[in-house]
Amino acid sequence: MANNQSVRRHLDAFTRCRIIGKLEEGRSVTSVAAEFGIAHSIVSRLWRQFQTTGTAIRGSVVVVHEEPHPQMTGTFVMVPKDLTLRTIIIRRRRFRRLVIKFRIDSSHIVLQARRNRRQTAGEIASHTTQATGRPISRFTVARRLHGGGLFARRTVRCVPLTPAHRRRRFLWCREHRNWIDNEWGRVLFTDESRFSLSSDSHRILIWRERGSRNHPSNIIERAGI
Image (cartoon, rainbow, N blue to C red; front, side, top):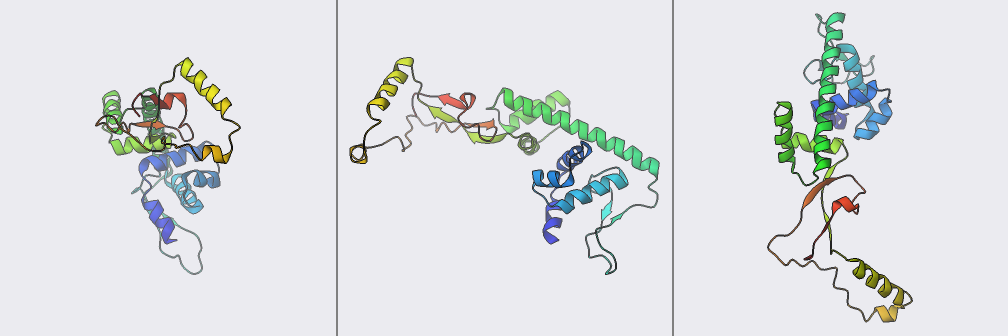
């Protein structure tokens, strides 16, 4: 139970909005919990909080974490006495607008990163602030990009090859395809070492999806590797 509490305390407003949004789309609590890597009970508690109070933002209600009475089971949400049905409906509408706003901002951020994958999180944050009029930090941008499936990774660099180069490499491979271990044992492979011909390390980071390392758009041709 202590582990669940620790994870729950670190769920920011954006993550809570995403969870509620997916549940409102008809997703099951189990699938949403698996997607976010959190316990089933945390998502279930967050969903009950939203249904009871109309919001899932931290501080709107008090969630009891202590062990309940021996004759009672489960986790309980303490609802203020003055919380009427109308208030709950208003809160739900406001929360849904907040979810929509988060989705729009996230779509804008992910679109920027995909248009120019070499932008830093700080640059994207600056552009987003100018476009929306709302300040946003680079850490928030990074979280939104992670939520959109984009992660900062090093680019793959390769030597630019002309058609003639490719043809010669292909012929060389055909000539040596039947070599045995003794023949390859006399060959010294030096391409595993990293050499730099300038002071710049060329370790450029780009925003890309998992499994797209060798996609042409994520590769930089450079003469000096």
